[in-house]
Image: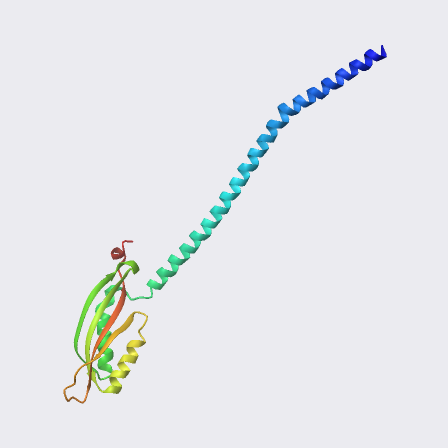
Length: 180
């Protein structure tokens, strides 16, 4: 009888081990698969978060660059000041006792920069020191004015220096001209 009891205990023990294995197979393996799926999902979310953080930094840098460009563009005079600027140029010359017999100008749109380039052709004549001072004053306006060309004209026996100046004025285009 002890042998029969011992045998039944072995059968019960083997049955319990089999049930335990079956429970492990039926409960733990799906739980492990679910945990693996959740880990993969978590890794994917972490990658997406890093990507979004990088994108946010890039967008922030881009936004900052746009703000800097806009601030730089605001440093140019508005296009509506064109006549006043040309008057300022001729008045500056006359103040320095430099004659300005001719002024011609042409407008060109620089759409990429939202600016208008005005090419100004000015004939000037006067004493060397006065013309030199005028060129110095024009150079001080370099934020929006560029001296593109200086050509010496034949003075034909005149005592005064005669020059043709080609200047470029850069003006801020009106918002409706920039498409904003």
